[in-house]
Image (cartoon, rainbow, N blue to C red; front, side):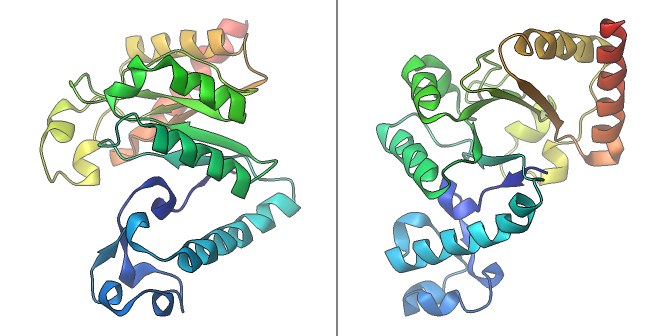
Length: 226
């Protein structure tokens, strides 16, 4: 089973009302009164407690040999920076020995080969994404940076992604067609020649499209084996 890293680690705003019990007390009073908090605002002891809690969350899966990769998904607004690459190194130090996967979603990352080189040095899998073709969103760059390759298909709902304030359901309401799935089957086959394991994950959950598309892709891959 794969796990998604706590949003605070990747620059997302975190609702203070949804923090684990007792964690709000570690925040300064002014942050307790806010609806959300971010990494740059919180004290170091709070961050360390979050990492302790996250490792405890992963432990049952690790103990049973069931943990897959840990996904660090950056916000779509996060552009390339050395600070983010330094954060990747910190994630590796906090989770040594685990498979980490890093998902860039701003288009600027595609123009910086040093970002992919850094992932390789850190032993982190680059997450190849499928998103609508919009000027600020990451295109699908076919790259392998570790022994595992990860693809995450978010759908191509241009209207949903282009509209400010759109809900999750509005963004991910998309069903892949047969030709689109055949294209991704080809990508998966190419990646399999460069990585020990390839994971293709669908995130277009609305109306069951995620499951339907995953089954259809599985059939395409089985057919290519025959």
